[in-house]
Length: 388
Ligand SMILES: Cc1ncc(COP(=O)(O)O)c(C=O)c1O
Image (cartoon, rainbow, N blue to C red; front, side):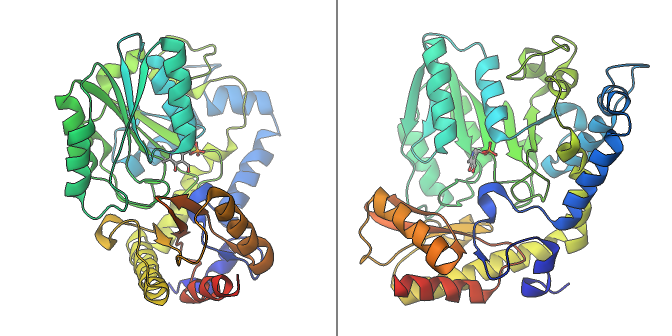
């Protein structure tokens, strides 16, 4: 299949918009939105029957509902058994569920990195405040040049437990893919439980979640796996599942890991039920072909921009998948206010969507590549920054 502008019609992106921000909230393909709309139409023919009996299996003969069937399909993305995964609305919800299920207390530490996603950092701060636990932020290298450098930095900074470490699989701002197996091992040696935040991972890299040795792993399906918003998946190690509860507890308390997470009050199940359509779409594109295209285009574009601006990236090619951040030329004043001014100017003056941020005294632009992008998008970005 040809990628680039010839497939762009599969999405409803505004004509002329350069969209280099697939990673932020995903972009759902039109075919998947149609499938979701059809699911919603069907539910409305008898909402009570569809939702309570057929989708979540709360009424009638106990039987796995259609939501469970969708979870079974989604589990493949994690390389996990279906019984070990549950649907959550998004990565944030999954992180909060783990934080509030572990019975954290005084004397516990919750370790994050300085590059941890801001929303997760705040969730940790809140959970620690409630539990009397201590949040600890460790410094990982930036830019990240090698997996060894990450491990060395963590080894030097990681405190001993008891407590929980929350580490990214793919760092939000830099797109760096971290060596999770080795990170988990270090945390275990220090007596810490580990939650891996894989918000960006499903659909960007192949996963084998049970083999990482973590206590829990959360990922989004609405970013890179083409599912509609809001769709996330939470894997929990079997021995910890009896202690795990959703953030919102409802009728199914103590009815089992899957049952508790599958009913958290009345909500619209159509996004998760459309996961099989999203995965069919991914299969139709062919993940291996998509992977080669996205990674290849990202690096061609990034090397070209680095040459043009005489700058560098936040992570080497081998540590990136479809997303990385490129340093902007030093003539741009490196303040958070200027970063947001530049981001606005890119969007409103040049119709380019890409996050700009300040880190380490420089400005960076984060670039996400999906199959609807092409090299011209990088040229448009360079032209816009030239004009600014
Ligand atoms: C590493 C990381 N964790 C968590 C999140 C939160 O994802 P969501 O808003 O879908 O919960 C993000 C979002 O970009 C992220 O990059």
